[in-house]
Image (cartoon, rainbow, N blue to C red; front, side):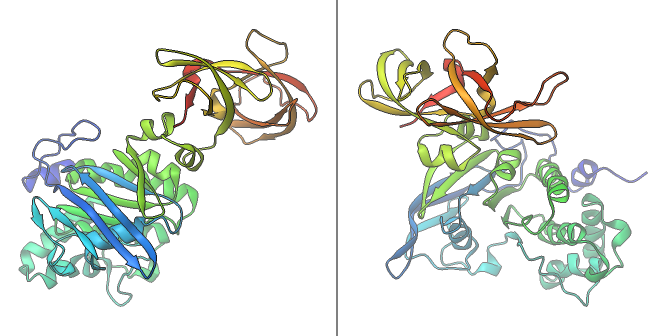
Length: 382
């Protein structure tokens, strides 16, 4: 019987005990990365604008943001593909900004698989070992073990042209980890794959991370990918980190309108603050709807923007206390979900998502419904 990935890594002396989410497992091989006040400019454009970030050993952290937000620039600065204009980057307390890329010892996975077309899978995976001067017997053993971890053993003699896109990406990942690096950098590695294959490899990367214990820095513009895979997410825009936190913190408690709108679908309700008591606010929307919301902000007078996630809104045919009358503008059946857009009497749009269940009829355009949510279902933005 073939060894499990955990047994393979244990044989090499690596701990495989999973740690708490966001923390390194005991015996992890991952490095600590400290980014301090990093600046990278292209003329007047600041691709990295005084970015500071601490990544813990063995952590899986994702840089998430739209195109031009600076996420790939930051990864390239850490990798050494680009030079800092100012600031510093340390790995395990040692500055690396003057260390050449090939001497930083990082594993790298790119959007383009960058495999050698004339080499077999085994030769592609073993290439870093050959360049490092590892003896043949050790290299052959390490390649075989890595192919087993990535479930590629049966494809060892194939060339890249004989493999699917997903298999090629797994070869690229195998090549990145064959040296058992303390840090693995991944730049949108799944963006070229179809949805089903992307979701499958997301699970494989998460399992791999738990198995090898390396620190992983992952770049993506796909919010679902970030929420699924990360210990923490750093949301970026205009060369800066706007918010950093666990997936649940980023999704449930975004700090501002940008994060709320970029991560997940959202309803942003502009409202007047009527009263604040402790962490709960009473607010009144433009349509006259009075509701309560949770808030950690210091503001207690004036107006506020309130996030209400579509899946937190309940719809009913009949009015209930605290509900808001709405008219259905569109209703889509998405398989496991129903996606309903409705408008208030004053023209605001309310988006609702609910799971499909037996006996639940899809409302028709023009239907009059009533929407409601509780204080814990919404969040006052700063």
